Amino acid sequence: MVATMKAHQMVLGWVEQEIAEDRLRIGQRLPAERTIAEQLQVSRTSVREAIRVLEAMGIVRSGVGSGPDAGTLVIADPSAPFTSAMRLHFATSHLPAGDIVQTRLLLESWAVEHADPASASLESAHALLEAMDEPNVDAERFHQLDAEFHVALSQAAGNVLISTMMGSLRDAINQYTLDLIVNLPDWSATATRLRAEHHGIYDAVMAGEARLASELVAAHIEGYYREAGIPPREAAQ
Amino acid sequence: MVATMKAHQMVLGWVEQEIAEDRLRIGQRLPAERTIAEQLQVSRTSVREAIRVLEAMGIVRSGVGSGPDAGTLVIADPSAPFTSAMRLHFATSHLPAGDIVQTRLLLESWAVEHADPASASLESAHALLEAMDEPNVDAERFHQLDAEFHVALSQAAGNVLISTMMGSLRDAINQYTLDLIVNLPDWSATATRLRAEHHGIYDAVMAGEARLASELVAAHIEGYYREAGIPPREAAQ
DNA sequence: GCACATTTGTCCGTATGTATT
DNA sequence: CAATACATACGGACAAATGTG
Image 1 (cartoon, rainbow over the protein chains, first blue to last red):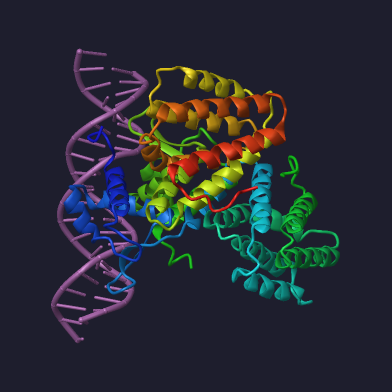
Image 2 (cartoon, rainbow over the protein chains, first blue to last red):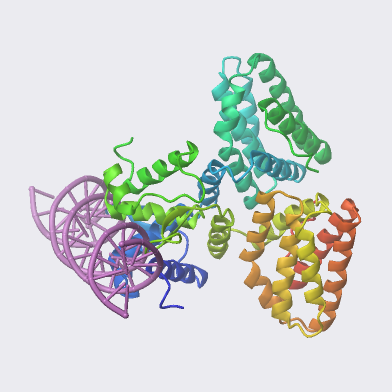
């Protein structure tokens, strides 16, 4: 069992154990690659492969040179694995766009319903609303602000997992939706509608109208994707 | 930009492009590591690092030798990145158990509410029910069957993303909950209750009582974790 | 059964770039 | 301006697995 385990997986297991038993905390640095290699009796190549995987998972970050930003240190970026992996799986066409939209709908309507009106992230949401209200934003810029608005909104519920997933899902189909949105017949009319809906959602959240906010955001997302041509599988919630 | 990009990321980008443009499909093999290295003008080490990352993402699988199981071939296992990354992030203590439970509750109650009574996965769910009804299953075995039952149940809604996430979330806190369950004062009584609740949920799904099934499963999960000592942040749904 | 080719797995040595001291 | 520490990257070499002739 242990003998047949690949060398880099041994390193992965070692790091996981070190973290689980609190010998490695966030912000701390891993030993140098050569040191780990010697300790675990594997080659540096294997250590590097493991570090690459951990990097992709958002568990560590490595930098060259010396000093505070150098070496390999433990971080906590839960969004990293979701975003990149989701994009690739979506590309394989084995993850239907409809499933992604449906999931995003579920997560976001929940998040909005459970948002805390006093949350700081709602302040950034408001700032993004104002930025989108500028008359001279183009479709692409609007789309980006739109994405940030939805993420900020969903952070107000205080569940890092849900807001992280939400953001990653949107990223995964970002290009997909953008391609369709910029080709809309009447972008100006669509933008006006989206602005009004955003304000309606934001106001409902701030007023503590949880149920209404949830319904508004669901309708907003459904309309958005229906216009973009992604078939909504069924109404979530 | 391109010049400063790390060598293995170039390989990752290349693979993603190959997949996105449909030159690389599921089941197909990547060129040999040395071939890729030569094509992209990077070292074999860099190619291997990229393959390790893709492997962790559940995008490829590599085997030694020659033949059908050899080489590096494209697969589609969306659960891989979730399960492993979730476990590690949970270990860093920057992903609260309450958030995980809350998310699982949301996903599973949705899945049950949207389950198709005619789905094949409900047949396996029924088989698992019967296995759990055996009087001589121990706590650990019961726990494992329990986990499989919930996954099978959530697959009946037909959204691969949601059932995958659901399963991974349960995996991430699997050990956590198991440790507490096996130390229950009266395991026998708990098992009896869980059995009854499982049957209730299953029957409601089969009868098309979506709303009821959803409420039952929510109560079931909440009770389960309350007993295990994880503070439920708030009722989801 | 045996030699051979192919391909991943693993390791080592070495050179380079970066940043602190 | 060195010396040091570290990740990055490359190429060569051999082992192990799995087929084919």
